[in-house]
Length: 385
Image (tube, rainbow, N blue to C red; front, side, top):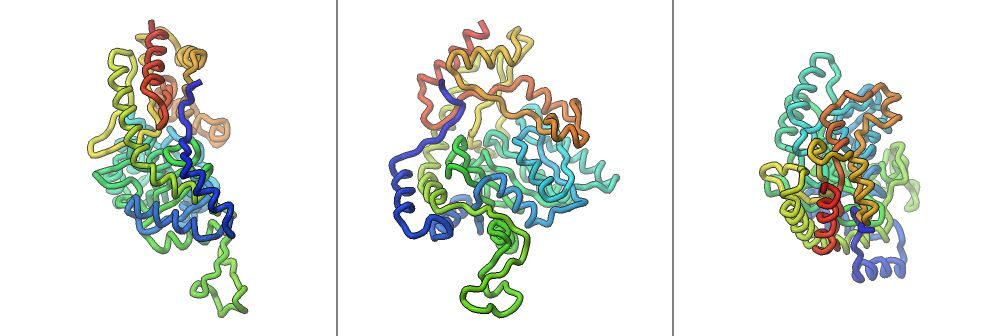
């Protein structure tokens, strides 16, 4: 079975982890700060805060921005549930903004309309979380202009997008966002096995996220409420969590970061080849906006169902039977039972729902061969007849 995604681990990656295993520190050593600095440098951000998952990064980012009861967080329905759950963790209410049918990202038109309505109703969001779906950046300049107009914070969910660019700058530079979040799950572009990072250009946000990731505890004398009792002393200053990244994870991430340029280059090449090979097949794929450079975490096709006379499920099942490990990204979050219990229902976000009924993610990863890619497309040709 050709998987839809998978990690690439080199001998250098393995050796980096082994060196940590042989060292004095498996956690809370110097490798995590080294990884944070290297990643911040890579994306041209001032500060990076490493945690144990992208979900944890979203959570501490929301808390650092003061999200709480009585607030609203808005995000795209076309995402993994974590992009919305982070708001609920903070006691806030969550709502969604429908997607653009061509980019599969949050619709700027829908966002502007919803903000104008919310201003009249007194329900403006405190935070908007645009999701760079499949590695394609949202129109962040337009979102930033709306943020200035309506007074909300912006957290970029770039879980799919490390290595991508917007307006010739690295995604994560935070030019148009308060915080950007990355995920390093094994199917992502680089991996730390599990892990995430939040980057920001604001020192106060970085310090608060650092505090929250480690129980709300500090050993920084300058942050303490009084002189320490002794060199052993620490203070809990907030209700934090055990969200720390281990030294092993950071060592893997630091090593993987060296391979990121070639990972992105190969994904770009495979995406171009898919576009060429699929030219005569009744499918469409994600529109790339101007001044963007996708990281191509996913390659999603939309089936033109009226032309192929088969359902999405039939195409999906037949591809799996032929050894092609396709997937579907994503079930719209508002259709999940948990969110329907909160009052959401089918029909609330029709563009995301229409997309979901037609979408299939084809395999895309660094080690996917040209022959495997050709086989995948031939399978589609056979299925479509």
